[in-house]
Length: 197
Ligand SMILES: [Zn+2]
Image (cartoon, rainbow, N blue to C red; front, side):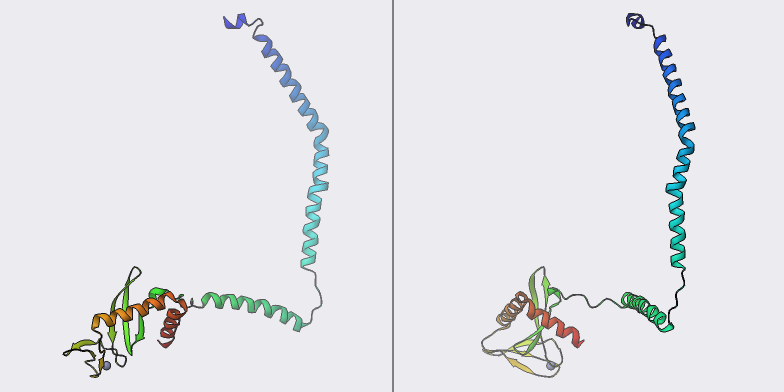
């Protein structure tokens, strides 16, 4: 019903389409027959011929023989060879020591003793004294009014008049804290310890 109300029969469309298709294919055939050989000729003259020429020129340039003295040839060969060897050696060489971090700073000397400590996050804790001579953990001894730190290995005693163990630790902790905030100081200590081991 809708086709009859459109005013023209659907057959006319089909006829027009067939005519158009025939015309277009005829045009394409004519184009191909007319310009096909021309296109082939153009391709061979402007695309293939230059590629072939460039390739043959490059080949003859690369394989062209020149008279070079042996010493020059040797020099030319040595420099790239040295570069290659250098690259290989660099690759083979073990990576240097890693850059020191502040967390590596855990040993230092204060008040004539060796001190070790640890970090909990950024907090210094467990500050502990050791004998500077034999590295024994020192023990605190106290008589009536003064504190000694004693080495059980060498028998040495250190007198910290007026300081108990806790206040002495506090003093050392403040020195560690000061050095940590002065990058040059803790870096120098870590570097010295690395080079001595
Ligand atoms: Zn000792």
